[in-house]
Amino acid sequence: MALVLNDRVKETSTTQGTGTLNLAGAANGFETFVAGVGNSNTTYYCIFEQGTNNFEVGLGTVTDATPDTLARNSVISSSNSDSLVNFNSGGSSTLDVFCTLPANKTMDMVLTTQGDMPYASTANTPARLALGSAGHILQVNSGGNAPEWAASSGVSSGFVIAMSIAL
Image 1 (cartoon, rainbow, N blue to C red):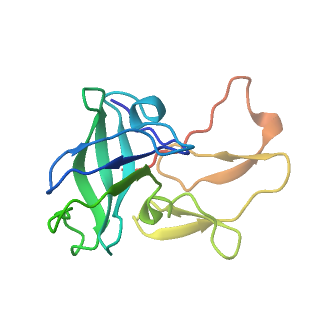
Image 2 (tube, one colour; image 1 turned 45 degrees about the vertical axis):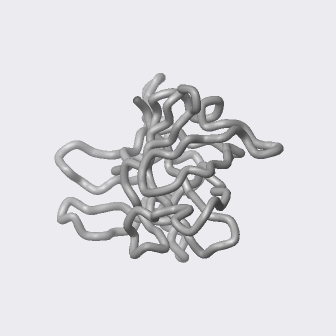
Image 3 (cartoon, rainbow, N blue to C red; image 1 turned 180 degrees about the vertical axis):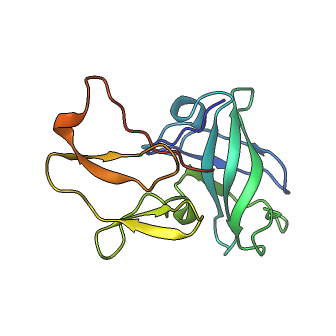
């Protein structure tokens, strides 16, 4: 099971309650969760109940079945005080269900207004890494030192820079 994000993944549902959603097929111009995310993979989702103010953003698991489903594993934000929303509780509304990247999951990947990259220091406090000049790469030293920019000429072939993002 992998975390997968994809553009233009959107389906509808008429599932009631707070449980797993039965997905009803791709909206026009979009693809299904199974096609865009894949069976058994997790993704960030948003559910919006048409004609209401009800919404939910969370992390869910896609299952290729008859019908395809989206399990609502954890809620990040919602119109129900950031808890599961009881959708269609007053009738048979249509739900729009789509892939999204929640704002609070992007905070470690964005640049500050000063053009710097934020990171957690060894003291687990916020710090900023100023952007490097052309021809430099991000280098993370062993021993818990802060990341720094290094001249790319000193990097051996096949060197990979990776960042870990907590989910």
